Image (cartoon, rainbow, N blue to C red; front, side):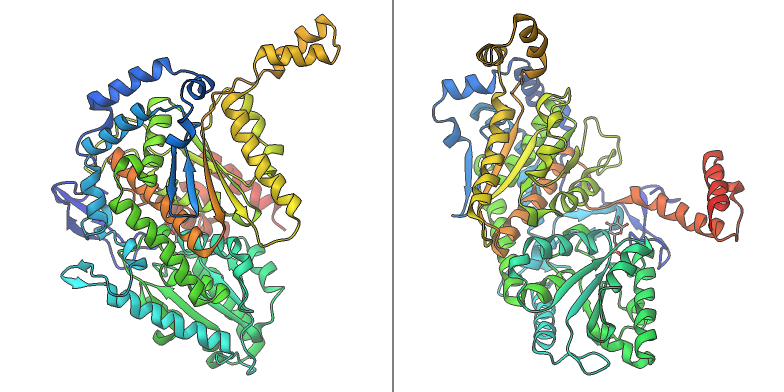
Length: 581
Ligand SMILES: O=P(O)(O)OC[C@H]1O[C@H](O)[C@H](O)[C@@H](O)[C@@H]1O
């Protein structure tokens, strides 16, 4: 944001309404964790573009190299592998991409991420979410203080709280133990915990049911509360800033619902805890400081599920399982920190985005978990990746010279096959796909499991190798069709193939594996941001809409007229007034 003092930048806590008032901070002179030159100016990038003009078909690549599948499959421990052999790359291309990453300062940026040297300049904040999953004995200094003891002190507070809730020692206003926990939060204070609780449903054995309310649509809160008994319900008001309108409105309405039931404001305390970085606002809201779980400004909202923001996860699956999630993420952190780029999974995935998006020009990335439990994973990834890398200026404030964040989208398989995979197979847009599959499942119906994985494997194969005109013709001929019918049907039945995909295969969807998988995508996002030279840790683009919405609330409540707004908005406001009951 511009500021009156040249070379300075205006910052805010990243929430609206802005409190405390925006302040001015010196803009860091040098970008300390991004590329120092634009990707597109490097001779190596031109060489990659040149090589992309003559890509052999995937079928030919596999015919010419019988080791291709093994060479382009990367293992993470004993329970996760990433197969990129159906991407339009060979080992030479990968080596060039890795060299490109070195030329763009990636080694320094990765080291910085683990050493308090990764910075979010537009909000003047450090980036230290990896500290949240470091073991107790680790040391990570921020402003001269080792932050790991504070991280573990907060984890210990979460553990004690979980024990009290699970043992039935934390009781509601009638003296009954808690049965349901409702997380009230949005964005990073909702998507991660909601996704993890759903993904780890088989581990939700503590007897505590987790619910999530995020939307300002009253239907979300009302339909959730309709299923609950206030006497046995605990609310977790979750907001980094504790100023987000949707969360505050939902939390206030939930408090009123509780008050209506218990009739005594003093008893409401037993049903509300908060997770935030802003103790003043939590206390102003009426939640006691001792019932607040803290995290820190150096944790970005979309990277925060490992902090106290993960409290509903720990309540639902138990604290020990939550620690396994953290351990899985830490293992991926160590992988990113120590592996050479040529075998470094998050680095390779980010480089494949550069290849597919910047070199080959594919505008979006599809992610398709073949797991109903991973239903919310694409939505989680959308915030993680698109809010981080949907940027048009570099860390030093210049317009970017190449495309940044692709559109990330997707849904679970096999459902998606019956909805939009047609476009993936035969549409004019090529969508690089990431399939995520799990070999084992705690559920019955083994035949279903075989079919689920078979479908995932089949999709990757069909995208890569397609179906030639000769094969289609032979098939139609075998069916006894006339020459004319064959000529008419053939073009619609040919599958072009050569459509890139990655298969991420996991042994089982455990807390540890899920932790690794999420951290893998966090690091993919971080590495992409470094390669594009953007700040992956701010989100100024969401602020204007919040401000306009605030003004329009007054208009819809009849306090101000719509004259200040554009003609299209005025017309819609008029229609809302006419139709409103
Ligand atoms: O946790 P909060 O401060 O309530 O913020 C919740 C969300 O609000 C925003 O609008 C941001 O775009 C998100 O990055 C953030 O996660």
